[in-house]
Image (cartoon, rainbow, N blue to C red; front, side, top):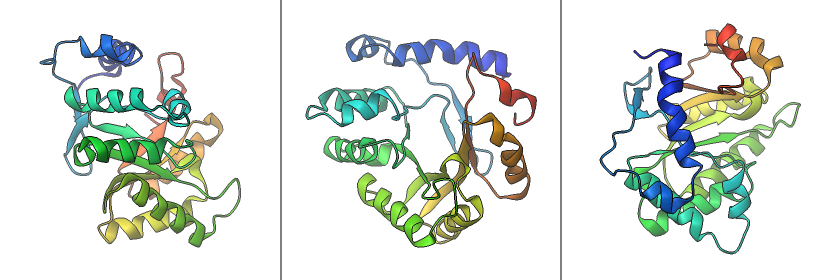
Length: 216
């Protein structure tokens, strides 16, 4: 198993590459092997670095010309990438990425990770949460989604309960929770100790390593 220091060193260059314009990214050697890690609950291996869609991807997804996003997704898959992270709150990202993947015929080659949260700081309406999840299935265009997480720890008892039920039904492969708020780390730790999570989503970067103290 690699250490955090080794992981940061190996992935720094990859992150910089993803920030480049697509023609430059495509110039990297095709034979370069991506680093992967096994999902603890299953042993399935996925690349350490994925493609997010909350910022630049989301902005471009709102425009009429999304050809650049099509090129990015195509290049990601061609180079062995699989993980695409999105959420209903990321504007048109979920819908546009799903449509592009269908057009390119790569839907089944992507590890789709999305989220659910209708709590908005309070209690989540179960019907609204289910409706949001069903909308994600429709936008992504798959009968089974790889990963759905409760976004920002929104009413975890209600929304994670729904995800556990849907996982048991075989509609979701993996479940988890996310937060980027340091004030929620205590709550996150309790959830990790008491719930059968496959994934967590946290704010962890070279310039933000607070989670190392407790979560990691």
